[in-house]
Length: 176
Image (cartoon, rainbow, N blue to C red):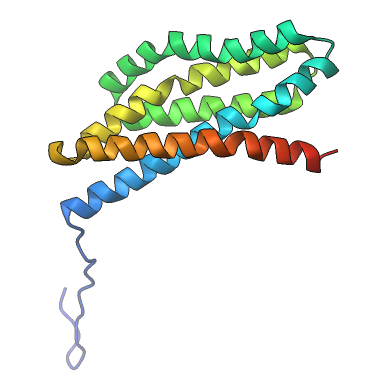
């Protein structure tokens, strides 16, 4: 298409990002994902004893609720690995995070211990994507940067683990 006489035809161009910038952007998104995922997992831990007690459960139920997450995560991790190998890392992560988000809503509105247990099982099943995150980081980085990138992933995960219970405890205190 030609510009009319006397007018300058400008072509819009977007600056191209270097492959390194693209990898850094992906890594940043993955680190944030790992952080938010771990905050979500551990934000509920301080609430579990109170929820269980309010619903008529005791220490055994608290233990079952905590263990249910880990058991579901243990059983689902190989399945998530297979899904991510067949359908891609991003779809596996989005489905897993979506399942976790739904489970947090179910957790918040649970009226009995069985629904609470169901929410923890779904949380754990959705949380089985930790290996997918690690594989995605490995895929998105150059071999010489892989160990450093996985170290950053571990740091983001640990930051979420450290901050999640504090947020949960604080929100519980503010909600009283």
